[in-house]
Length: 281
Image (tube, rainbow, N blue to C red; front, side, top):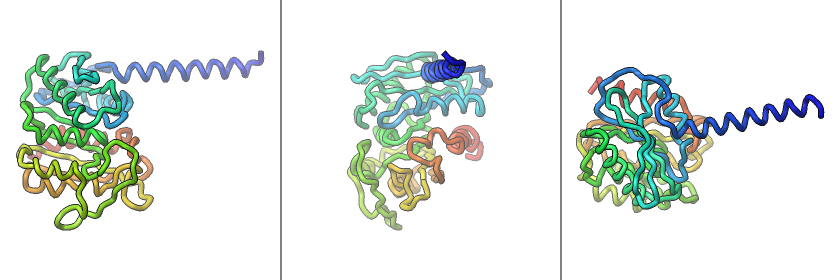
């Protein structure tokens, strides 16, 4: 056999080993030592519909290297909402928890039960009074449902990324709904928006919310799956009700729905909002 054959075989083996190593490391806790910073509020990273360890895995790795975040725990949620925790929560630094659902198609109501069980399980490891949530896509809806459920552990800071807050069908392929936002509110409202509207009195007044949306700049202001107007429809619900509400639009090819959690601008915005801007409040 020619030398080129063995070169291609060697390269193929290297690629396979690299992919497998990356896959296993993304669901592993603790990558490297991080600075000691007393932070009593853990941050949960929750993937969206069909989300996997890749959804926030690389972001957590980048944020540990650049912003001192520590991935302490991986919380695995079974279809019956039972929870298995890998790792130990430590509030002597900016602690992160990667939430993974074994059923990738679970709907928001079931995701909510799983999220509640994750927080209860973490409380058994270490007591905390508030939690931060970083949620992508449909799980932004799950996070909002948690907000208004009057939970035992309230949310201090919420970051939603490309969340379909005013879509008729959540987490299923359907035409992108781009209902205009008027001065009074969305031109049309979907059931999830109406539910949040009815429950908005339960929103904690000290909440800080960073709402990130993507715009591919191809016309229509959307990220390929969720319209900016859908994500930002909640502004009418939270106005004058919470401590801070901030909107950010990420533009360009890297603003595609499934690439937003791979965008370093999003990394920066999250880190600044959770751990830097709090000094200004």
